[in-house]
Length: 143
Image 1 (cartoon, rainbow, N blue to C red):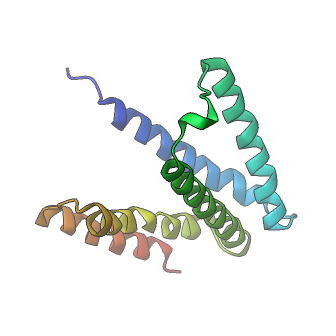
Image 2: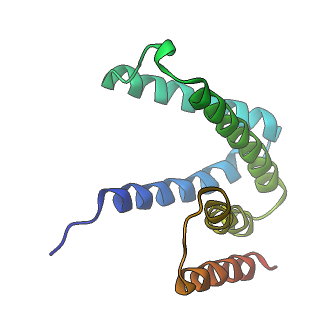
């Protein structure tokens, strides 16, 4: 029996935790401003990631990181923050069973952006999968 690929193992864990995020956040944003809820979530994440970096000795001198790396990590952080703020607002206003699938349209968008930005090549069956994923996500979200 072949073992699971490391990337697939971590990706499946990510999906599981993303699902739990939706469930926990839906309860968590019921009686709080969603922007403040996002702040609390962010502080928890900062504490956890700081602990992981300390435990694993994952720090590196700031001057060893390129300006390009900083620039794109800042852009990624801004996009993450915007995503979380929108996600929590959507969870407060809508059903988790509908909001989460729409949020997962990011999977479809990543495929499209990867082709445009990185020149990645997808085969026809990949595009079929992307179309089916988008269709499925919309069907899940339809009231």
